[in-house]
Length: 272
Image (tube, rainbow, N blue to C red; front, side):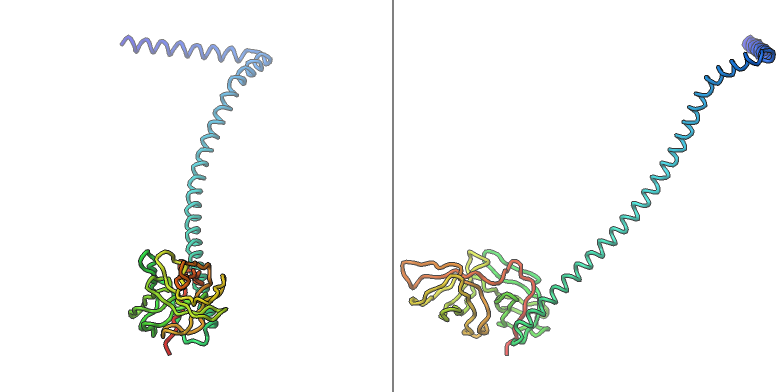
């Protein structure tokens, strides 16, 4: 009860003060009023400016968040477009690869037009310490048979050793079990080129006639003897000659024309 009376008295006092101030302001001269207005303006304007800045700031934040959402949508669209472009690029790369393969096939068939051939490509390779074989994409359904020679645009690859319906296994000339009857292009002497365990890019030329001078850089080709490889297919070039105490045992290192690590397209020569 006491508190309610106290609040009422305080309200009456404040009302009286406000009425007195209104009377004073009403009777003050214009010049004095202007002075008071100036003082009031100096107090009110900064507050007003601050409130305006705060309002703009709030509005700016609202725009900022709107822009963020727009950027998120734009980023999503760009990612989708980028994904589509990457897919198109992969498709173009595949088309380019297919075109390159077709060009290689065309080049091969033109180069070896005297042979009836079947084009294929390497699908697997076993170039390990003990084996030098590859698997190609053609088989019985394509007319491939065992012992058919396999070549590339660079030269001799090897021959077919087993055939499935859709694939075939090739023993390459760098396999340690491979032997190819060959000729040196300059002297036309016969030699035998064998694969080794030491290298995937060279052969060992053996049984070199004692009276034959081996020329470094000389071309080596198939002799046509042995019943598998036709005559005249390029094998490689003489890289170096290794002399021994016995001239009969000397041998030459032959650098293969085919890079077996990068071999992709081949032709199988059909048996006549």
